[in-house]
Amino acid sequence: MNSLFYDGFNSKLIETAYFESLLEIPVLEAPKEIIIPKRAVPFSKIEQISDPLDMLVFYEQDPIFRNFVSVPQSYDSLLSKVKMMSTPDCSLYRDMPLWEQLANIGVSRSVGYYEQQQGKYVIPNVRWGDERTYTNMFFDIPPSFAGIPKKSNVSIGTYGCCQKKEDKYHLSAFLEAMFDYLSPTDVVVYGAFNKKYIQEYGKYTNFHVLPDWISYKRGDKHGDE
Image 1 (cartoon, rainbow, N blue to C red):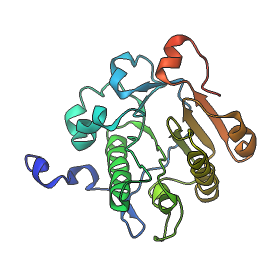
Image 2 (image 1 turned 120 degrees about the vertical axis):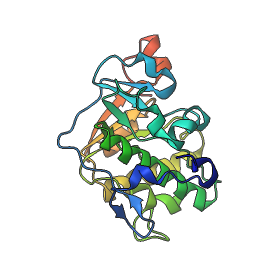
Image 3 (image 1 turned 60 degrees about the vertical axis):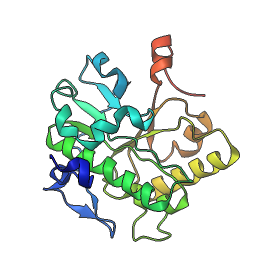
Image 4 (image 1 turned 90 degrees about the vertical axis):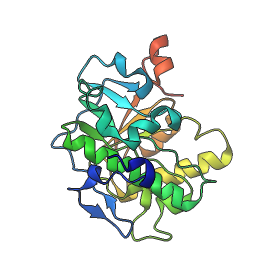
């Protein structure tokens, strides 16, 4: 652990993991049952968690949880009351070099795997970047979906991903690819989610739209647009 600062690789997180695809992404364990969270609490508000159905999420700017994803072992005590969480939402911007997008996918799965080993109920966050991440354009498996159990539950966040026409195109293409490859039974959505996506893709899954933290504190009951 003392060398982590120098090599950037926390091998202890995944020393018992299985790996998937040519990218060797850590594989998350499928849950024994589907549990749907009652509300989503961002990492910066972790002290607000008070219920086993509160899901800790990471739909915030990366610097807020950077130290956590680097050495999650040092946060075991802080997370002791957390029963349910998503995997970290490490950013995948379309203008990022592909290697960085892939690295952030691997980091998210690694932390998720570690937290599963600590007894947490982990819902995989699925994050997409450009089409290279959600198609098998270059790899045997779409990187965005590697390591995630099929026909299970996943979590997504759309904040900042629906502003421009190009954003909406990639969101629709990603959703199409996700349902085709993962066939998730349940999709937990953090924050605003246009109802047209529920109407279009609701035949494939059960959507559970949870308000973002600000909306929740304001009293909004859901995050639909």
